[in-house]
Length: 196
Image 1 (spheres, rainbow, N blue to C red):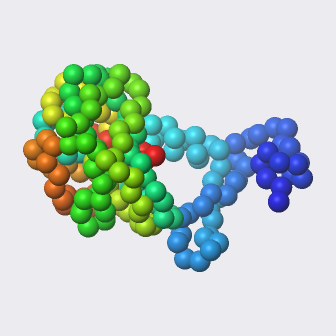
Image 2: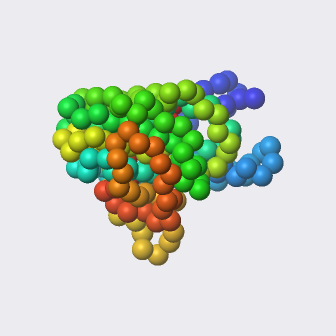
């Protein structure tokens, strides 16, 4: 089948920004999930919106979490965390929790030294984990207050539920525990992080 970069589709010589292209909506019903369309101008605005990050001064031992949704089952090796304005000195560990808040996977509980400011840092789980489709929570925990993870800092619209959920809870560094899943988005709390 012809695709974006494969022969068979005419090349567009000029873009207006209003062209629509299809995206998977992650609807898990059936083998062909329904798709929605988005234009480059809307996608650019959303990228700018979601790209509004801040640096979080952590409380030692506290967990900071952001939701992530998987449309299909997958195997995950660890978490990519974006380091904010200050890196180094502190140890970080990462966890993955399911939609009920139960712990699914964790990195070494001794942690690893936070990476360079402004860089992405891969932190591996103690063992890869295979997860089902659904909503999960990525957790970052620090043993200090110097290194700062990047956190989502965009304002949530007041008139509609927001798909990204963020939260935090107190804890003791290196001790894994369940979390209470958040039901809302709060700015300057949830870490900017992705699974790998």
